[in-house]
Length: 240
Image 1: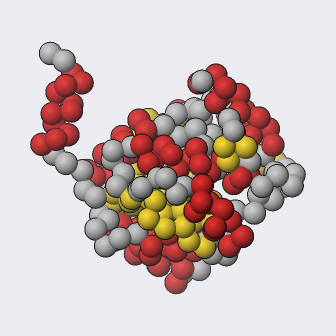
Image 2 (image 1 turned 120 degrees about the vertical axis):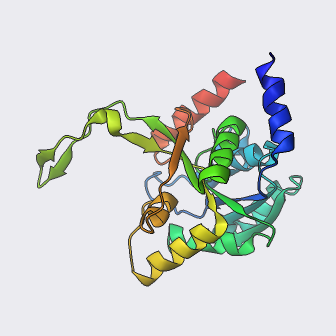
């Protein structure tokens, strides 16, 4: 039996809910040593373009909103002009949660699943996007993760207070995909509670929602420092 043919047949019979992606590229790159990471060149194109193109090419995603800084609106809109899934390029907020809310508001009313992705993860693949969206269509909330390799210590005042079992730990990536109404409600509640959330999963976790973790990709790194940018360039060179 051809498994790939069977999988494709099942996908046609059971179509995915309409999924929109919000790509967040509104940060100020405070740890990049003066490099504007959103527009940092990778394989001849700005980093954010690589992130957007992966979603443009993925059949599981139907539309895209990019959230960025005011000074980059026109430039990013021009760069993505030929990508027909890009619905809007909008201004972000004071923090990530506010930027995500801005992006969600710009999605069409047809969207049932919202995929939130860091614009600073340019090595995201269509395969990771697809399986995360499919998991979210079943469970309501899903995110890719990779096992933690290093031993993690809980430290207070320079002293180790605990050593979590490494086998239970995963580093969570993006896109993180949710039922859009669930995510909107969770973000609004976090705002009302003045709660600090480190990612979108943490917002829905506060509401008691379990997040399904799917297989991520070690190459799907978040570019936060100049060293990360160097690694991303190497990975892209190897892939070409």
